[in-house]
Length: 300
Length: 259
Ligand SMILES: [Fe+2]
Image (cartoon, rainbow over all chains, first blue to last red; front, side, top):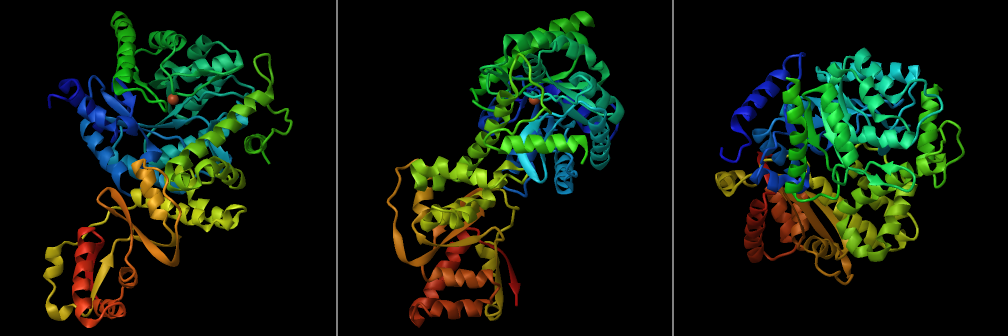
C-alpha cells in the first residue's frame, strides 16, 4: 500500500467513481491525473507518485484479449480510470458505427470508468477514416446533427459523455456561430458534459484569431468536467497541436483563468508523442496543482 | 446532399489529394491561406498512417530497407484507411504487395508482410486456455485413436519460400539485416500466442502436415498416419511423442475432444 497515491483520498475517489457509474447524476471529481501511455506503464506502476487518476485511450483497449487488457486490469486495480476515445466521429454524416459503439460499451462495462469522453469533430466520411479530429462548420444544421447523435450515444452507453474541443486549422465560410457558442449549445441541448482542452483553445484562438478568454467566458461553468493540458509546436504561419511538448506559458496562463472561471475541475497532462521520463510529466502535473489549489482555496 | 455532407466530402478529398482542389468553403485570412491550412491535415494523415504501419511491419522494414518508406507511401495513396483503429490499415499491405508493381516481382515482400501482420493480429487476439501434460496423460489408452486435439484459434500457419522469420527476428532483436535466402520448397512458419507473448518459428518438414491435420480436426489415429509418411515405424512413435511434448510446452492445444 505504501506506493499508492494518498491512500485516503484515493479510496474516496474510487468509491465516488464506482457510484457514478450506476447513477445518471453528478460525475465525481478525481483530482490531478495523467493520460496512460504504454511508454509509462512500468514506471507508473512502480512509482505512481501524486497521480490520482488515469485517462485511457478507449480504442487501445477495444481488443479481444492479450497484453493490452492485462495492463489495463492492473491499472484498474490501482487508479480510478476514465475512457477517452478518438474515433466516435460524432459529427460525421456517415451513420454511427454500431460495432464501434458496442465495443465501447463493452469496455465501459469491463472497467467501469468514472466517465467516457470523445471529441467534438468528425474523423471520416464515405467509409474513409482520416484518423484526425476534423472540425465542423458551426451551423444550425451541424448542431442538430450532432445533438441527435450525442443523445443516441448516451442512450447506448447509458451515461452522459464528455465532448472535447479540438485544435483546428480551418474554419468554414458557412459558420454562423463561434466555436464556443456551438460547443455550449451542444452541451445544453444534448445534455452532455464538456472536456475543455486548454491547449486546444489556445491553438485554435491563435490559428483563427479569436480571443481565448472570450472562449472561456462563453462556456457554461456547470458543463465543464475535465481539463486537458498539453503542448504545441510553432509552425510557419499556424501553430500545430502536437501534444508532444511541455505545456507552454500561454497555456498555463489560460489554465489559471480557466480555474478562476470553472473552479474545481479534474485536470490532467496529455502527452501523445515525444515521451519524456514520467517524472517530467509528474512535475508538470504538480505545477498545475500549485497553480490551481491556492486559487481554489481563496475561492472557498 | 446536405451542406454538412458536402463540406465533409470536400475536406476528405482535399486531405487525400496531392494538392487541394480550390474551394470557397474554407475561410482564408491574414493568418494563413487555405492551402497552408489544408496542408496540415494532408501531412498529418500520411504521417499518422506511416507511423502506425511502421510499428506493425518491422520485418518488412528490415527486408525492404531504404525502399520501405516509398512502399508505405504508395500503399497509403492507393488505399485510404477504412477502419477506426489505425493499426487495422495494416490488413491490406500483404495483398497490395502481392499485386502492385514493382513489388509483385519480389514475392518475398508480400510473404514478409503476411508474417508481420499475423504477429500483429495474434498480439490482441482473444485469450484462450491451454491443456497441460496432466490432462493429456489422463486420456485412457483406448480413447487415443479418436482423440481430437483442439488447437489454439490464434494459431496461424504461413507458407513461404524465403527466410522471412530471420528478417523478423533481426528486427525484433535489433540485429543486422540477414541475407535473403530462397528455398527450393515452401516451408511453413507458425505464429501463435502463449499467455501474452507472441511466438513464431519455422516448422520442421514432417511437423507441418501433422499440425495442419490437427488444425483441421482430424483424429489422433490419422495424425499418426500422416507422420508415418515421413518416418519408418520405429522412428514415428518417438517423433510423435516429441511433437506432442513440444505443442504442450508451447501451449498450442486448447482442449481435447473425441471424434
Ligand atoms: Fe486533448
